[in-house]
Figure 1 (cartoon, rainbow, N blue to C red):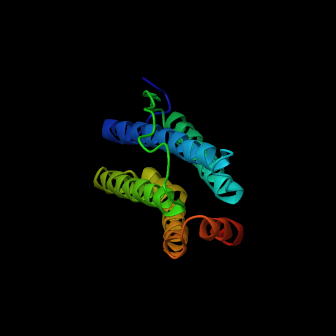
Figure 2: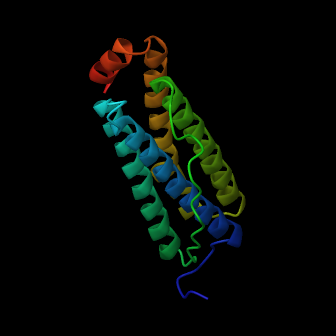
Figure 3: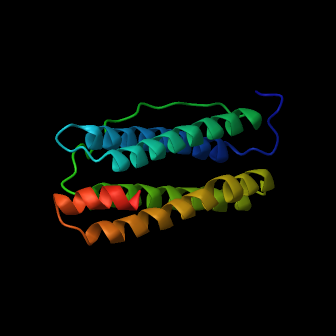
Length: 168
């Protein structure tokens, strides 16, 4: 048992490990989308950069959660990362829909973990979730929703090209 561990419930440790796995899976999913938009037959470079940035942010989040887990005396338990289910996208709004769904699930998971921390009187975990996790995901949801709304307004071909040039 870790000498650092104090008032860190086993369910909190499990929840943080689940969020590490989720963040790594999302990084992988967003990397897949970035690779798709970088293909020569798709060639939407700003959308590619956007998804690459999202991938990097999720990987950084995983590292932040790993650091937190170690700081609290928990044990990091990495799981296998599954292949993304969405590998091609008919239109940018489809990729943004995928990202929105993932971010909403992430927000729900963070809220559940927050409620657990509150229930188990763990103010350190509560503060970490509120400041480091919930605020950024809410900002991300707003940005993705705005982009999705604009993507719905454009057609394929030239519309996608202009969307790529003007929205990112």
